[in-house]
Length: 245
Ligand SMILES: [Cu+2]
Image (cartoon, rainbow, N blue to C red; front, top):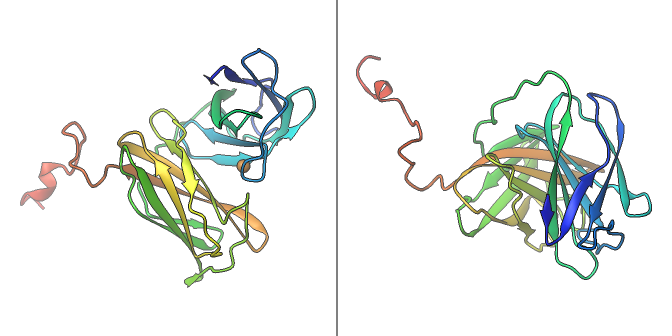
């Protein structure tokens, strides 16, 4: 929520299913709302909202409403716990990502983390993930976009690149630093480097634009999957391997 003296402050309560003018400030070390930002990936501030179970993801671009107040239209369709992240760089400062909880009142049914998968389907597109998340390293991830079995080679720039990747650790919603690899190729492959602090499960959300529309492909990836499994993790039950089948 706070880093280097900067704090993300939600100002709005969200009700289930109601489009809300969600307002917030980022206050600086002097306690006042920050008004000057650097442009990063085409925008002064990137606003990510996920449900706590990482089943839903929105990547939004708020407008400055004056006096350091940001505003964005936000609809959260189900009750539960949500986390908002503001990704920005104050003028003269370095990049920061601050988080804040956004509760939505009502009955909440937590969903299990989607299974680990290297393939995602969205609106008729198939996105395939290659590369492994290796704890403690910048891990190279390549996402390959195809439609109807054919590689997509005319992706459109979105936020100054052919894709934008957000990675979150499932356990505590830690927000990973991801750097896109510079490329002039409009697909099918988009490459990123993700810095993974630890083993465990992560959710990856790829925004890409094709035929005038931005879509999001999501994956669950396990960091350190190539390493020996910790003893505490239930693996294949011994009964599956014996002759009772
Ligand atoms: Cu953004």
